[in-house]
Length: 396
Figure 1 (cartoon, rainbow, N blue to C red):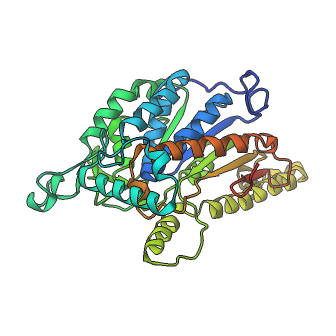
Figure 2 (cartoon, one colour; figure 1 turned 180 degrees about the vertical axis):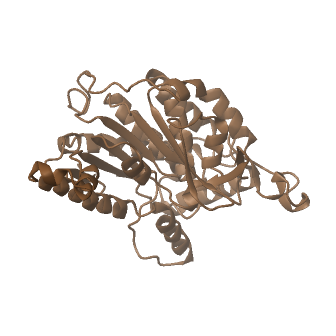
Figure 3 (cartoon, one colour; figure 1 turned 60 degrees about the vertical axis):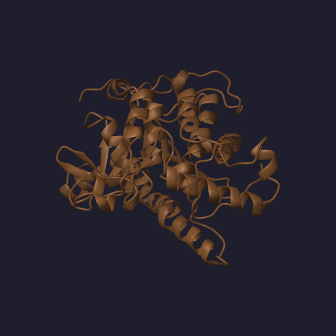
């Protein structure tokens, strides 16, 4: 599919972060993990980037990250935050059983009360679904004949298809300069797959497939193959963007909803929470460390190649090394949601409006804090050409 060249190094107005002009990178990537209801954190992070006038050239996501990616790429820049807000307000609500008055002021005063609120809200979503997103199957799956879609999942995601068709302009995704990559897994082969608008037309089915987490949601059929949520194999698109895309100077904002680091659990509830965090964090930091080692080798190959006499450069072995080496630089900015003490293992399907607003605000604030560090927006000067930044434990 022919696509227009992406504009690079466009000038920008003075941003609220204090940075002037687009960062000096060929590509700005926005990489979004899966994590269900926690995905509002990514929407808040995008709002902060939009305010700072740092638009992504490439959005890549898995599961809820794929939904956020589609909304971002499927709308003009000036409408993206509003459309994200429309989606997140549409799929969340204040439960009918909540206390009258402002639940935030009443329930945020103590962890025990808030934990009860969150758990009951999650139970409500489990029983009744989330508006505009998913609904429980009636009758339940075991009352349907084997082999039909209804027999393979607890929930129907037809509402999500309608929501995507209303909020996302898929013609824009397939014709605009923003690259879009959505991760899924082939049910039969077990192989990881990426739907990428550089390679194929992207539609609602590709977004649904990336978020089809079994046994909750049904597999999605695309061109005769069935796909489940990409988080079953890897819950982060970092490797796809850094290693499968074209080599280019890249500033990547990796927005994670699950933190690989955490305290040792003290009870079964905390064990379940910690298990989920470890499973779905996909060892993002380990991936970045390995990528940094790889780029160090690439830079070293270039340095040695420059010193080779011309006749040696013509050898097949030398040509192979020259193809491997490059001097591209990468900054990877980790933005990681820090779970609250009252959140348990149901935090990814707790769709209350109160929690959504908290997650959104956390993503916005974390990104604003990161942008106050000019080094994360400057080209790395080290031998490896890779800068890795994680400000999660800093209070500034």
